Length: 125
Image (cartoon, rainbow, N blue to C red; front, side):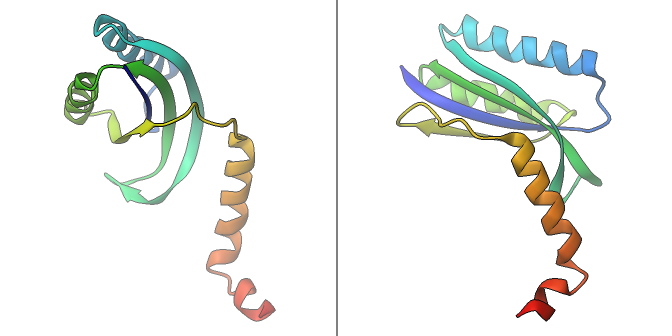
């Protein structure tokens, strides 16, 4: 069994109940394929780098699980069909992921957004 990490970006218009049922569906799919879910996180709304399906923000969901290789194809095929999913990415890990602070990521992104188009960064050079 391999260790995988999947990040899913969901439409920001989805309610919290829909997200909870969506996460349960993902959990169920992993466990029915004899996988073991090790970690799941809801990172909340984060501004996207570019608009996807006319959305500037997305709700990020993060999963780490151990499973056989075939689960990845089945999971991504199911996710691509779902309308509430904007993007998904699965990566095979060699070691368990390190902890990182999502709030810091959001803060860094908002600070970068403020200076990106104002020209402040260019003047400082």
